Image (cartoon, rainbow, N blue to C red; front, side):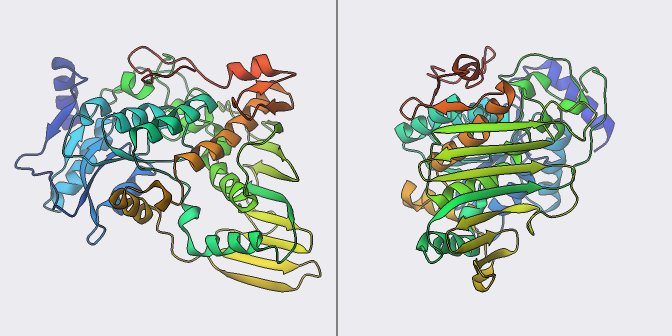
Length: 431
């Protein structure tokens, strides 16, 4: 896209009400066939690109009818791709305006984490179903709020932990639960990879094609900085949850699934920067233990190791009385305590979006493999690990209130929620 085109739109953006931020390509007809589920995708420079591809393909039973992004280069660049295929799509800058569109049945959300619940809560109140990327929430409190809200609104919500819809992973989890290797007492969640540093960057004027106030949303106002923008936002507490919530959501979710547990009674976590020497706020090294009655989940993260740990970069090990089960990118394997392989299979098909569409049609939350409930508890583990690390405390969690109690509780509970900027509050949220 030429800078001339961006500058023209940037000028129009500032001349007309920016919050309207809406246009439809000439001659478009965004209504799908009666059998189609009409999907809007919000945020698609990263994972959202896969959402568009997955929801907008022949035979999928769905169709992308609207796209929304606060970066005009991203937004209108994607619109051009639709046009080149002879297709049209509604484009929005402000998700709130998008949600007024009656031609949208479901919203797929791949914004930065701090906006997940902001967009999702307004979507379900507007009568839309929602597919929400991981982690579901940005804080413990808003996760519980949204889970309750989705149930109250009777909306279908799928969380983006797609391993739950993988045939091979499902089979591996069933093997863990079968008891063939005895009781499983510890599940390890492994995130071991090399992520490059982001260096140091100075604040700068906001680029003309970026609607930065909308990008900030509920977050505190800070000057624009490229190291707090595209993808690098993951490494700042105002917008992300580090790699614990980013990649770790997947492995922590599988660990929780295999053990059949929800809320831990206590969590400890240590971590910090052993490798990065740059603008990162979040750690490059982290170890957490989630305590349950009769079992533990152990989370280990290293972002400076370009090699595998226990044969995994991202994966899980379930330690049982009579052997262990390994679940990773390629599939699952089970071994008796003498090292003999006693089971395994490739990962197989992974049809997470298809599972969501099935539930949208059936109107049965029970058809989902990763509903808002599962998303809430998995995200809660990620957040409590980060809070335990930041407070330096072993934190005890009250099962009824999902609040911290005992030593360190006052400081920890302040991190359990956040303040929302005016105009981006969560409807009815009590904190």
